[in-house]
Image (cartoon, rainbow, N blue to C red; front, side, top):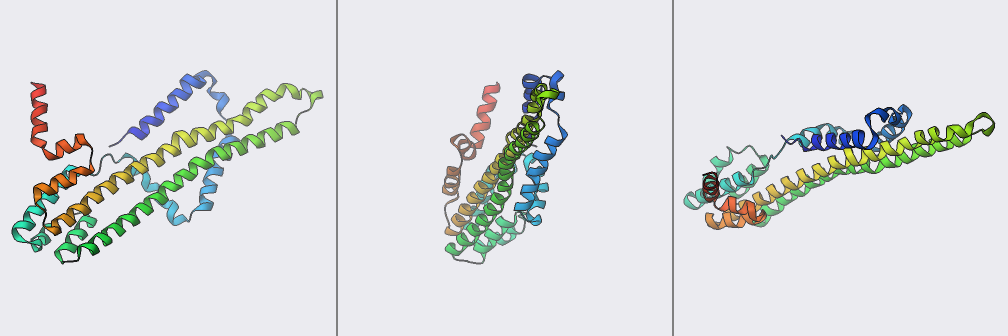
Length: 271
């Protein structure tokens, strides 16, 4: 489980409340109409921009934010190398039974394509088209949060302008209006505060985290595609492993190429 999203919001809130505002002055920063203008206006703008079919996917994003590391590249590489060995020994048809054990439908589809002797170019085209469609769906979802990030400060400014107009309209020097300028101005500026907090502490981090999750899945499927095509081409399993680990960082590469050496190194350090 990945708790960084919650942790970040908590840290940001604590710093704003206890370091910036001060708990004893927190009441100065509450204004119901300002909340309605910023939050309600932002949500209304997004609803007006997207069909309900796309908006209902927002409920699924909570699970994605907290799901943690879902894609195990080391396990995927091991599986592909094992399949490569099996294919070299018994032929591609031997992978059909192995494919039936795979839960990942994308992976299973790719293996069945090479078992059915589909041309490599067609296999790549089909799988990459699937990945492109996935990325497009993910970018649409991320775009919703990018719009929320942009609209929250805008409606904060709208609320500020509404407050300033009302303040100026109600000014009356003969009835002590000048003494009310400070409180009225503070109330008007609260909406800008709300908009900035929502944009940069809530919506922007969610969009960024979804982008990270998209990149993780994209890398996972790119490795999968290259592995499937290498199996079809009859690549040597050892060469296949070395080829696939080029997609990851040097540190991860060492673990994937020689996991036993890494574990021995850890034991030696502990001793």
